[in-house]
Length: 409
Ligand SMILES: *Cc1c(COP(=O)(O)O)cnc(C)c1O
Image 1 (cartoon, rainbow, N blue to C red):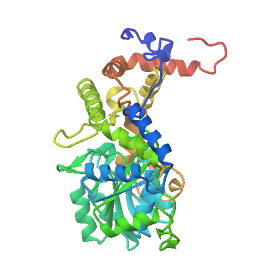
Image 2: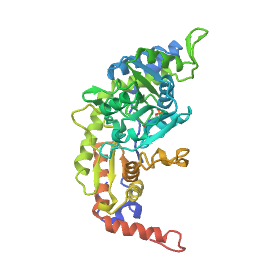
Image 3: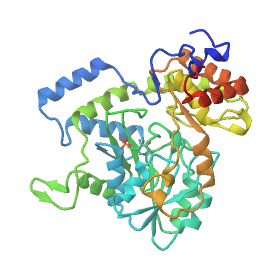
Image 4: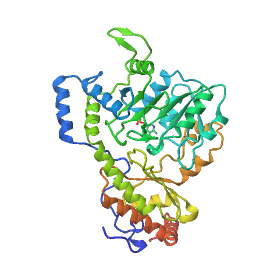
């Protein structure tokens, strides 16, 4: 695809889209399909489809090993894993969480009659701001849930100190952070427990899947019981539980993908490097960078667009890119506190969450995105920003003509 030279070359103004096929954020990373097919045959030969089968057991030990943690309990998805971890920790009343996260973090509490209390984020990290937590603690508060957004670990040290001082439990939604480290230690063993997601869009997927990881033997035992209806043996139920089991097919996918983990990271990282080179110095763009001293999966490429400097708003840039078939996303706009049912409640001001949610844009990455794709995306963004004023006036002219009869552009 030749570079765009005039603004009429942009697809939004009638030019050819830069990509013939849609580029998605979170297109699945898939390992060796022969290896997966062989495992699928094994499952069918064994006729052991679920209930702690050999692949689930193997997947659990591989995940525990990679995350350097004693226990991994694999589950059907991370939302159920969060719900079970919350229940096994006997949380109640109010739990402090960031609003700038996928809505499942808040829903996992609300679903069980626990009130999520939203805390603002640190604008430098996009993670929960430890300095804003104390003001939210009441006599009903039982825990803090940190989210390692984009795979960049929370300020775990500060959160652990706060939790200790106020006798609160500490749990981490590590849905983004499989394969990432904090101060050189793998994410997985921090707080009382951490929860990974292996959803199709995540760095490592099991189609749908998740896991609770923890170093607490008793907690692990409770979680294991709860995800299997509370069964402690044949005909012996010792707990109220639910069905959170991972199937053998999912574990087969997980094991296959784990074999390609290093390759996934290498591709993500190369793409990240080019995105960083091309975009991090642009005026009005704040590029979310990763600490080279830590392990990271480099799955998320996110930018903040400061409209006062770029001229073009985040949403306008998004429209331009969508027309080019680059389906960038506004994660996690508008923030949980602006979604139902939370939006109906009196919730304190979250200025940083609101600002980041208004300016964030997540770009495609993963093993299906080539370096050439990355360069094309970067060129589109640079072109739109460099020609900001004329792009804007053309966009606004186009909007005005829409709906006026007989108008043509
Ligand atoms: C994806 C995600 C979840 C939910 O994971 P599922 O496996 O889809 O249930 C929870 N929290 C965050 C931050 C996520 O990104």
